[in-house]
Length: 221
Ligand SMILES: NC(=O)c1ccc[n+]([C@@H]2O[C@H](COP(=O)([O-])OP(=O)(O)OC[C@H]3O[C@@H](n4cnc5c(N)ncnc54)[C@H](OP(=O)(O)O)[C@@H]3O)[C@@H](O)[C@H]2O)c1
Image (tube, rainbow, N blue to C red; front, top):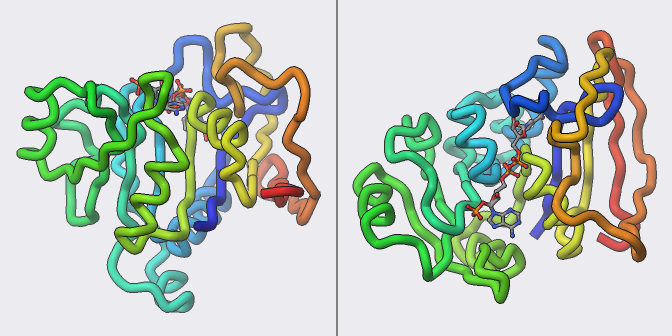
């Protein structure tokens, strides 16, 4: 399993505003970069918080790049969604690519049935905290042939991935705006670390659009 996390953050590290509304942080050149990254992945992964806030379809990717890396079809889509809060009419269920929902055994039967009817493929992986256990869920995705994952957020999911030692690479576009707000989502939210901080090694720094792309590898990832 190889996991790349990619996100756009403001200069002060925010993913969006305190209203949790989608925010344009980067520009066209960065959208193209993201399309290339998606093309290289077997699946694009988001948390249900991002589905509820942004309603992304995650169907865009760079077709030439996908061919160049020897992959066929479209990247699958994955939502980490313990209790099946993804609406059955969410854009992430539109179109051809497969959509996997990572759920727990507590997810309500009615919501499960509605999502299966809407075309979702459910993968059950329940952690001790009642949320999706990411190591277990990712192992199940790998068994489905999805071994290169690109995670696009949000901050709750990204924190859990670092906590569970699942991140291999982190790429951020850092944009030229300050968002502020103690309640605005940041790149890694969750409960936060107080020790044993995951350490990164800087692999690339590229000015792009009105900001900069930072690529890090995870020292022990
Ligand atoms: N700038 C960017 O690049 C970018 C990218 C993506 C998102 N965003 C922004 O980020 C915000 C959404 O982020 P978010 O942090 O609220 O939500 P998120 O990370 O997308 O989703 C978090 C949710 O995932 C579910 N989950 C299930 N198992 C989990 C686990 N083991 N660890 C963590 N989460 C788990 C939880 O809901 P359940 O308990 O119900 O399962 C949790 O509340 C929005 O404002 C969006 O606009 C920005």
